[in-house]
Length: 139
Image 1 (cartoon, rainbow, N blue to C red):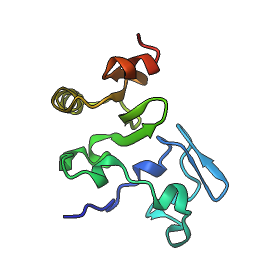
Image 2 (cartoon, rainbow, N blue to C red):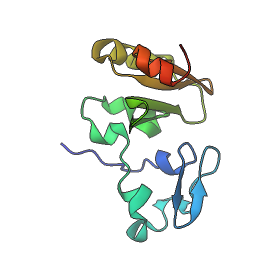
Image 3 (cartoon, rainbow, N blue to C red):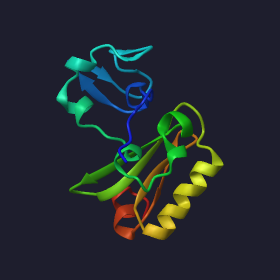
Image 4 (spheres, rainbow, N blue to C red):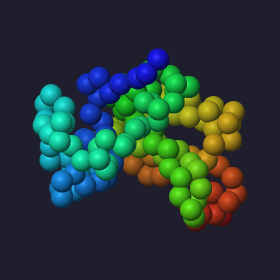
């Protein structure tokens, strides 16, 4: 079964960052092309970031249906960088992360040992291996 955004525009609402046709969007500044019905340039949206971006809810069927960004008010993004490696970034969408959502991520971390950066009340908390925590300046 393939998931679709189906009305969710969380990635365009100013919680993530990117550039669409020369217009920057970032925390607090939504994409210029986001409109009430979704994307005003959907047919002509840029490859990067618009066409290639997939939140983890879209790309991973193990993430429960109720964690869809417009329902859970968090965006889950898989990150993989040379200096930090693989981790999940969980970003709040304008409100503090719900305790049920946060509990799900803690349990996921404990069961999978996945490194995570979770925004909690606007600040960032990091969970994972010693190497991951060192890369984040925690230890």
